[in-house]
Every structure is written in C-alpha cells, then in structure tokens.
Length: 200
Image (cartoon, rainbow, N blue to C red; front, side):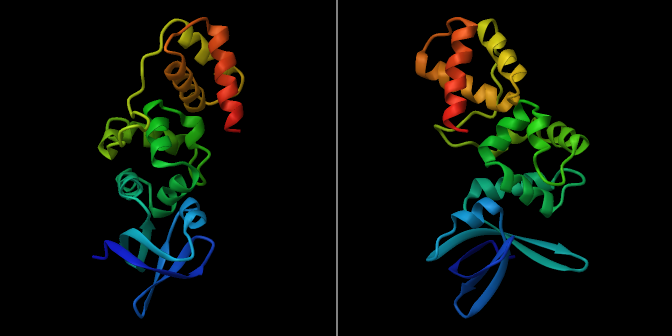
C-alpha cells in the first residue's frame, strides 16, 4: 500500500493534484486547505489508498494528524472519503476535535454533505475517540472543560449572540488563559468578543 509520497506538484485540479514522483505522476485527492497551502516546490504527503469495486483513489495529507483524522472519520457508518475530506476542508483536525468534544452540531453541518443527522452520528461515534488523535502540546485539548458560574453565563450570552459553542468556548479559553482570573460575565463577554472580532 502507498503510505507516503515525496515529489513535485505537476498539475492542480479543484480537489486533487498530480504529484510527480520520479517519472511517475500520482493523482492525489487533497482537502481544499491542503491544496491552498501546497507550494510550488517539493512536497511530502502521507497517503491513504481507498479501494472500491469500481476503482482506487489516493488521498494525501500534509501531517500525520490530518491523516489520522481522515482514517478516524472513515470508521463512522455512512462516512466515505468525500465527506471525510470535506471535514478537513472545512476545519483543522484541532477544530474538529473541539467540535466533537463540545457536541457542536451546528459547526459540523457547515461541512458539505453533512446534515444534522450525520453530525449527530459523528459526535455519537467519535466523542470518546477523538483523544486518539493525540493533540500536540500547546494545542487545544479534546476534552471539554466544565464551565461554571460567570464563565457559563458568558458562554450562554455569546451563543445567544449567534456564535457557535465551539467559537465561544475557544474565545473564552483564550481570555481566561490571558487574564488568569474569571471576573464578571459582562467583562468576559466583552473580552471574548474582541478575540472573536480579531479572527473574523
């Protein structure tokens, strides 16, 4: 099985590249995020060979974590490579871990081909498994913290303003890390809105 390729991007398509390795060109399907990030020089991709009755397709990933996320997604009933690649085109592996941990159906339905029913299935089948992705030190945890008191009120206020639970929680975590104290709900909301505004 082909597990890794190093070569030069010869052609780019809407959802794939033609990777020249020696004298052989491999058609490799990649996420839109990977497609945008690939440079013109030599690239390295971890690959997954998907075998079907009507043919084979090769999928490429710039990191082991993205590769592992793709593999994990394929274990969910009803999820094929197209949907799995759609997830990685919509959010990073870290964000996907957070979305599943917080049971954020709304964010998952942003993925093409994923409706509320599929989103709930992803959460149900992967909530206890996203820790397998082993988020690197310094990145977000895959375990949802238990918010209480002022922080919980601030979270509810941000959701009422239209932010998803994932977005609101991420902003509040950054605020708390920077401040080192909780404070009043109103102060937390204002600080979180500044964080969210900086990333909009």
